[in-house]
Length: 198
Image: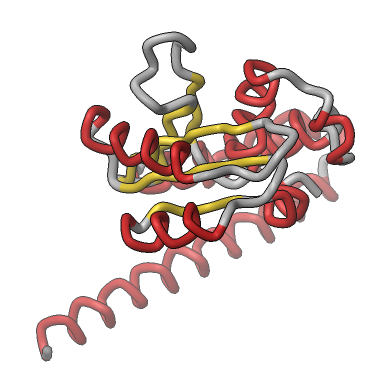
């Protein structure tokens, strides 16, 4: 415990020293720009130096690029995704699978649509951190029964996934909900999907 406390104190001191150094650097750089208005390009280079130095650290690079990709996916998909479920109701099965890819990406997943035929019960494969999910997508005109849950449960073993998800534009029958509970399958029905695409 004492070792952890010492390490935490050391990290806090390091961050405080780094933050103070960056603050002093920026104050000096802004003063330089005020005194030398013709040297704006030099000032901009000086302003970017702390950021470039920070990017030499692997942990900072990982966080920055993760944030960049997340923001990029938000901007890219926010404007093009249908937000009216009636539009989704008119999609065919393949369109629904392709539609779900950016929906999950907006929620922080890395998503890939499987090959279609011979997908072994998974229409999409999701990754988030160290977890891998298989997704069964059901764009139907009626409620979803137990077969969708059975298919995705089989896909968990085949793809060596952590968990399974079934997504539909409709609702699930009571037996499907019960089977999903037993197998720890995540169910996303019409109401939950509606919230995801807003």
